[in-house]
Amino acid sequence: MVEFDAIYAIWLREAKVFIREKERIASSIISPLLWLFVFSVGIGNTVDMQNISYQSFVFPGIMIMSMLFTAVFYGLYIIWDRKLDFLKEVLVAPASRSSIFLGKALGGMTNTLVQAAVLLVIGAFFILPISILQLAYLIPLLVLIAFSMVNLGLIIGSNLRSEEGFGLASNVVIWPLFFFSGALFSVENLPPILKDITALDPITYAVDALRTVLLGSGAFPLSTDIGVLMAFAAVTGVLGIISFGHLQQVK
Image (cartoon, rainbow, N blue to C red; front, side):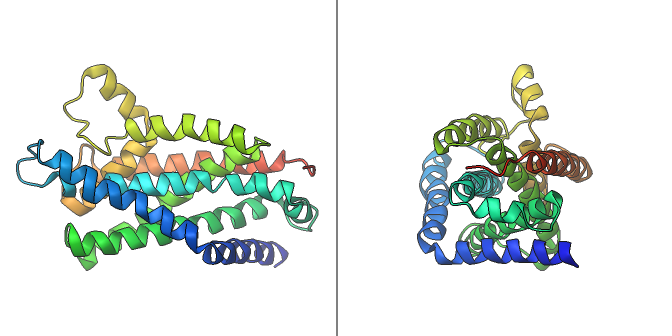
């Protein structure tokens, strides 16, 4: 019961912080909208996607990009909590580090999934229709993807002590994951070396899973995408718990 209460309390705190920071909610939506309605439209006029518009093709990739940035940068709150002494208070509470990590992860997932839901609604109205059946597939997929991405951000945040260091480390992680994921292009016609790199990128399978559900086809079987994402979630979850276990109760 203590562990459940700890998870709930931390999640509730993170959700309230997210709701109060309305500027962060708005700014996190503006960037993907620019990618969807400016970049994709501009590039789409020069790209022939045969049976589908380029805007529809990149919509799953832009969703994943938005989730990735929001989820990973959520790890910065670990550094802020450490400087505000909130983290010290949490760490001395009678709760395990795994419960603290899970509460933080659920808070980050809430933030990330709210943003994904907003983009889904916009996409359903202006880009491509989304059926109830597709939504039934999307919800568990987005939860799994959000969990993995938030874990990644928490791992980075728990191992660094400064905002500058976090910014540098997160950009080194985020941009390669995004650019090699096939979010903006098809991975099927790449040169062999790039195709091998994209196959090693877990975000590739997140983009491909959403593309399969929303567009009906992907570069990999959906079962492969889900298997890789589950493995990614498991690995980042274990590493996240280990990282929280090493957190020191100092600023």
